[in-house]
Length: 515
Image (tube, rainbow, N blue to C red; front, side, top):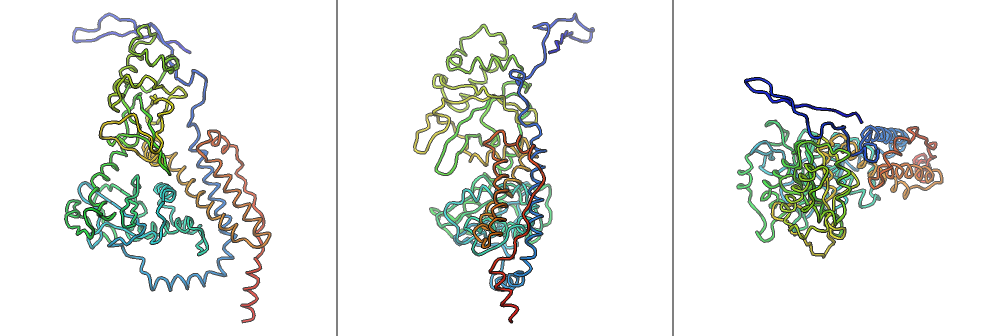
């Protein structure tokens, strides 16, 4: 590349001093990607996802037009049944007490005040009173809705309600209904971010919590502002200290929840950092080790202010990647890039001290040499990895490294969400919108396949389901080539003709004609 020469002169009240040349005398600006001429990882991804989301919406519009004629024949019956249900079930009020079910709680706060109902309760609505004990996948899907609160009405309209729907689909429909109910009661679409885990108790209650910090004390429908400490002191618990309800747990830990929410929005200052990757797995999820101080980024120490890693520095990292090289960090002196080597050496020691690992136990630790992690906002990371067998601790396996207090094991999907919301906001918003819609479409098309009767209905349902599966495969993050495939995917939508009415529809028309 182009070589640049620099001279430096000092200045004071007496004037300029003699110019001094730098050491080395010249340098060629470079980047670590020049090492193997790789393309930027994130280039064009947001634009591609945006185009794919438009395709999905176009498909929704196409199929909603085709289904409108069917809905007209059954709309009157559904409206009557819903009206009767509404007479016996009031769904326009907040829940005061939990009675073994799945609920959504909303925390709107401003400084030391939070929004409460007119009865001095946290705004809570019920999702389901007959949920299963494990809601991990449903919860993870719900977290994606936090990137598309304004689309809840559209999602509900595109999701047909059927008593024969699968349990999973019914749960998703109830989540959408409860969310819409909260939005109507509070008079706002934006319900904030989802807390990283549901709050559970021994009484069978599960509480999903959303948190939003407002800019001022707005007036909300069906709500008033109250000091958090006053709300906590006024609460009369109906449970024992040994077995508190999920609502009691929420009130007791509300300061910790608000602290997590505030810190998960903070970003690192620009620079190059050394991060530590440590995972642990359970039966249904993987968790990543983070600090409570900054839960949206890996455990880390700062190497320097400049976030760029040059080609020569990356070559040095490649040489240091072996275990023998890592052991020799304390003894090597003939390094061609002594400043970078020294900064990296100090960062390794500081990071090991932070996570409470003696230096002699880190002999098998490695530097990640596939890429420099460019987070966004001029923040870059080099990664320090444990030995391959210790990267992820399996259930029942003893963790050989016990960090100090102040750390948190965050579910991997929640870590991804809070991380990208801080560093690549547009990308994660588009991805969550697309993923949530396509996942719901998959459940809907599976239901349509089960309900299809005639050959034409089966053919149309299979084609629609295959289209959804194609979208799911394209956005699968486990395949790095998928986003490249998306850009080459045709936006032209080919659809089968509308299927003829099923025999059941013919029978209903004949009966109505006789009447």
